[in-house]
Image (tube, rainbow, N blue to C red; front, side, top):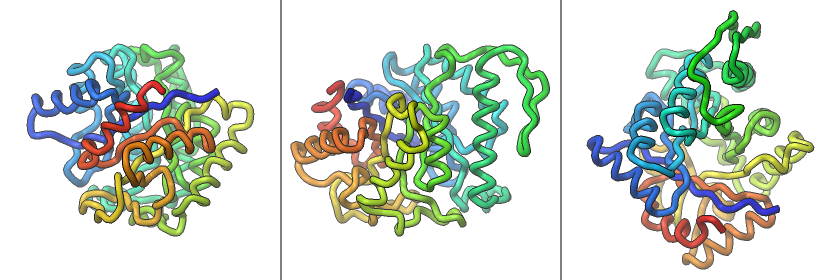
Length: 304
């Protein structure tokens, strides 16, 4: 069964509360499904929780989320309570995106240790266990290598049960396998370099992208059909240099769903083809500068 297309957009900041609310309402009025905020300590980006709460208050249908909360920046017990509160205050419109944290500049600037990828992925796996445990309700305890929780009971619980949809992004095999086991939505990306300097362009191209879907399918087993597959549209069209604030690098992704080139009809045909071929139905616009070019795609395909 084909999933209907869904569309999100990453919005980083605005000049005022009124301007931020207007951006959220523009997405809602244009047919977008989700407003997403990144989670980095450096660069021109709002802090997610406050920004998402304001966006939810300014809209009635638009879902909100982070692309993605960096696990290393918050203890999962803190995030569980913040997320449950946001889900309640948004009338059940939260989608919780979660990742390890990866960008070296965040860690260096804040004086945080950037552990090896395997350690960060293992810590994220424990964090997901803590989040889901706390969201079930009742006293929760956990003894892990990275987290210890002693009989903690939190209120409020999320409005969405058993919890808000969990979105995990990943490009490397470890993250993809974790996402296949735990996520409701998997956002497929390029693998990130171990030193946090940016995406590994050696992991780019159509065949590498297709292999990621194969990894998720193999690891997910019988739950694969319940997973929503998506990706981030890094650029509309070809030839533009990435902005200085962005760690995304679309240079190696031509021919994949992360770079959409051509006229409107060709782009819509490509999205239909990738949904039929790979099961991709959720597309997140990475760069607000492409919003005018991407909105006609949303207008044509939303709900299809």
